[in-house]
Length: 311
Image (cartoon, rainbow, N blue to C red; front, side, top):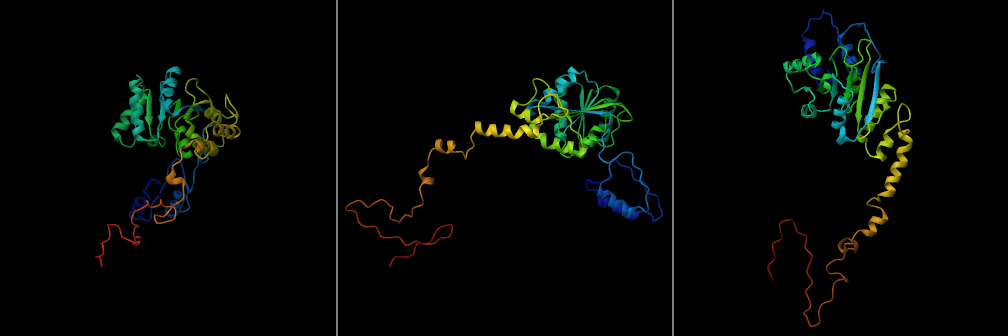
C-alpha cells in the first residue's frame, strides 16, 4: 500500500458491498495505513504480536567495517572461512543483486538472485533451490525482506546498508524466527556511517564492530567507525572522529589555504583590475602616428549591428 496502490485500494473498497468483514495482515502498521483503515473499518480489533520496529532478542548483530572496494572479497571470505551453507544477502538494487550473484558463481559459490524484475515462477524456483540447499547464497533486494519465510535461516548479510532503518528491521527479521537464534551481519563502508547511526537510533542498540584483518578501511577512517560500546577494537567514533578530521586537514591543506594560494600561478587577467579600452591605463600611441578617432560605444543585440552609412 505504501508503493502507490492507495487509489486502487479505495477503488476496490467502493465496489464492495457495505455489509462485509475486513481483515488486514501486515508486518508494519504506519500512520498512513492506520488512517486508511479508520475510513474502512468500524470499531476494529487490533492484534499486535510485537512492538513496532522491534528486533528479535535472539538475533546477534555484527558490523564489519570494510573498504567499499573490498566488500565482495570480504563476503567470499566470510562464506568460505565460516563454511556458511545457507545465507540470505541483501543488496540495494536489482542490478547489484544480479551482478553479485554472478560474481559469487565465478568464485565457485552456488548463488542465485531474487528481485522484482524476475517473474513469480523464477522467484519460486530460486527460493526452493535455496531452501533445499542447492543454492548456498540467495542474493535479494528488499522485495524479499517482507513476507519471506525461510525456516531456520541462520544468517542474513547486509551487503548494502539499507537507506531506511526500518528496512534493516525487516531484513534481519528473516532470521531468528519462531524462537530460533540468528545472526545479522552488515558490511559497512565509511560512507555508510550515517545509515548505521540511524539504524542504531531506531532499534536503540549499539551494534558490535568487528574488524576482519585485510579488509578494513584505512587507519584514519576505521578509527572513527569503531565504537567502544560493543566494539572489539577502537574507541567511540563520535569522540575520535573530529580529531582525526582536524589532523587530516592539517596534513593536506585545502585549496583555500595560504600555502595553496602562494604556490598557485598568478594569472594577470584575473589578478589585475578591469581597465576599459579607452582609459588612461592604455598603452601610449607611437610617435608620429595619426591620432585615433574615438569610437562611439553602441549597445548591440547578439548577432551584430548594421553599420550606419557615412555622412
